[in-house]
Amino acid sequence: MIFLFCFIEYANVGNGGERLQTMDKLHLNNMQKNSSWFIETAMGQYYERKGKDVYERRPGDPGWLKNCPDVVWIYDYLKIRSYAYGAPEIDQKRVIARCRQAFGRFDVFNETECFLRTEYKGEIYEYWVVKEWKTGLYVQAKFVIAKAAALNSGRTILHTSDQFFTKYEIDNDFSVFFPVDDLKTLYHLKAWYYPDNFKNSDLKDFQVFVTREKKYEKIPWP
Image 1 (tube, rainbow, N blue to C red):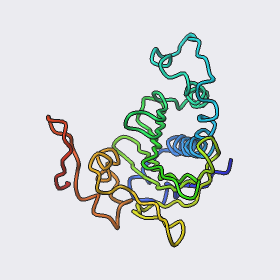
Image 2: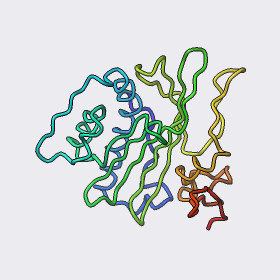
Image 3: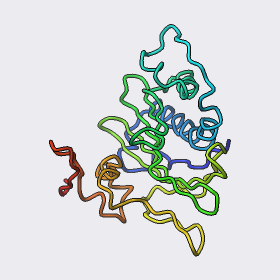
Image 4: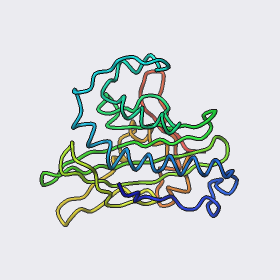
């Protein structure tokens, strides 16, 4: 695996990066490497192994793990490295794929999520967003386009940016578009928390929330 999407040096960023402690930077860097592994390697292996793993409860396992046997090995990979935080989610009702990581008292986080999957000429293209933060101090996001020959194949990173983009051109006839008109997607993207990563987008200027009627609406932010 090649770690292809490096975040900018914390010491030189805004977003609060200059206030991070050395150990915070270390853990965030480790989580970034895990994010790369999750996208490039684990996704293809998940579809290759799906339905073949049998889960047997082990001492110390959270109770919910028995309900998602296909991702236990991903959870174990992160737990060994001290970053497991909840169950990795793949092919769920709302989520294409999402992996959450945290360290210590859960004030350093990483969330890696696939927001779009599409096919073109027999190949798969995915739009990923990697978000990380330290509570009250620092936020950062990265936007990634990945390509795979099939669901059960490894992913190749085609493009990364620390600035949000709505369109990535594959060739003259096809582009990958982020679904910017879908309020439900924007609710989970939460661009308003990452204004420095949406400098060229108005998505940072409004917040999406869920009403009591479970409808998605937007209001100006802040």
